[in-house]
Length: 246
Image (tube, rainbow, N blue to C red; front, side, top):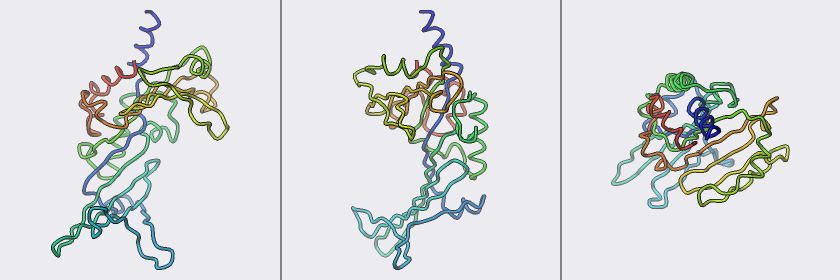
């Protein structure tokens, strides 16, 4: 009971938001380039130089062109869709943002403590830099995790003890570039439970265990009322996510 209480307190104190993917409607590459000079590229035909687009299966006259770019450590993708019908062509834009709020704040690292205040700062920095409103950024998937310092090597605990998560078996990660297997994962329909040795991953001089839920379908956290980036500025909503880690 004492150990469970300590873990619960640790999760509530150090729970953090990491990777995420968000959709923003009506944002064109020209708007983003005008705000801060972000450069975008589009696939082109190597022979003709023509911009290549993807024709829709349900209507071959509808075509989507993909513009890709970067802002700091975030990947940006703008889908420019041309729809034709009855002699009229309309154009719509959807911006997709992917990246880690935690990593971008710490210049590529996500093993430091990421307080709620830091989360607020990073969301505001991202939105202000791109000229977006947090309320317009619809979250499509998100990672919620906690880093716990342990007195033992996490990889030994993970390898020897993690067998099942609910009805799903834990499976080893694929080997990394050093041919190391640093953790295990259990794949569910709407989320993935991951546990791995973050100290080993980052070559830290101390033991650090990472427990994480990667939400791939937002139905999994529907009851928490988190749908847009603005919801992650609400302390009570973010704190409530700790329950899925515990």
